[in-house]
Length: 165
Image 1 (cartoon, rainbow, N blue to C red):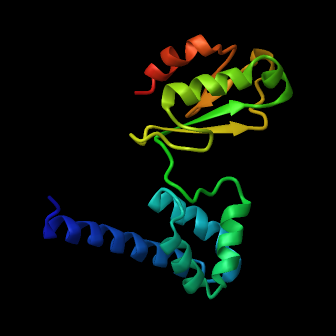
Image 2 (cartoon, one colour):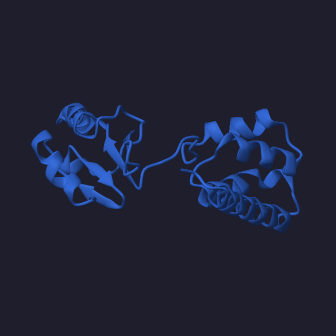
Image 3 (spheres, rainbow, N blue to C red):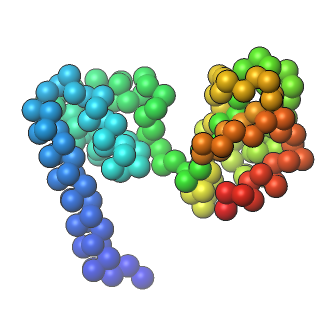
């Protein structure tokens, strides 16, 4: 059961985040050319760039919402959906692909019950592919958080994931 105190508390936290974002925007003199910095800060604060956050940024920087959305969707570091606690990046570079990255992705999708680009229902993992993670010598490779795992076979997936629960 949701109580009025819970709603009020959530609203208070949200308002505090928006107030802090406004302070950050003001520290940049609400200059339209600070858009990327402001979006980075907003994503740090809210976890991802929700529509209401993008609209707020557009208003505060006096920019068209389409421009703010365009920038947020152009750069791969910005996310419009919630992310998991751990991001799993599977390398799809040539060496990794040739050595079985596709099978690794299939095993991860099955184990996590998600498709590429999705986040698990418990919010623990987000599964993504990367063009290259610079680990060609240990292909196929994947990165979870800041840890690189090399020579990963489908049969290793369950054991590796246990270390991140």
